[in-house]
Length: 150
Image 1: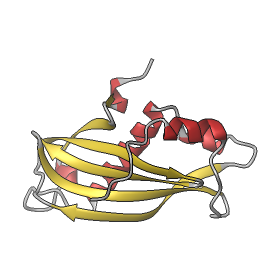
Image 2: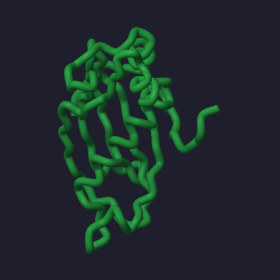
Image 3: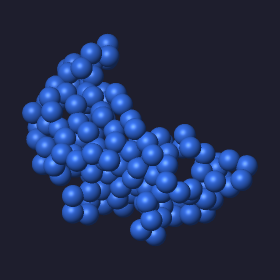
Image 4: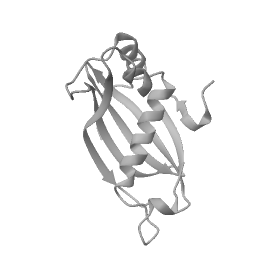
C-alpha cells in the first residue's frame, strides 16, 4: 500500500500537494526563492518512490548508488504565499544510461508559479556516474513522457 503522502500519478506526471508554511517565506509572506529547490526535490523523491525507485534500495546495493542533480534551470513566474496549497508536478522526459531529465512545475489552482528542468545523474559513493540497475532503468523508462523542454 502506498501512502497518499507520496502524491499520485496522473497520466504522464506525478502530483504532490504541499502547504506553504511560515518557515517557507520571507518577511513579506512570499516563498523564498531557494525553497522551490526543496519542493522540486520532494516532488522528484516522491515520484521515484511512486514508480518503485527507492533511495534505500540504491544505498543497499553491493556497490551503493545515489542520485545527484547535475543541472537545474528554474524560472519563477508568480509568487506563492503563506498558507497556499500548491501542487508540485513532475514529468520524466528523458532517460539515458546513468541520467534522466524531468520537467517540474509548481501550480496553485491551475496557475503555474515556477517551472524547472532538472537533470539527475546516478552516481557511486565516489561521485562517479554509474548506470542504474536494469530493473530501476525499466521502472523509470516506463514513465518517460517524451523529449520536451521548457
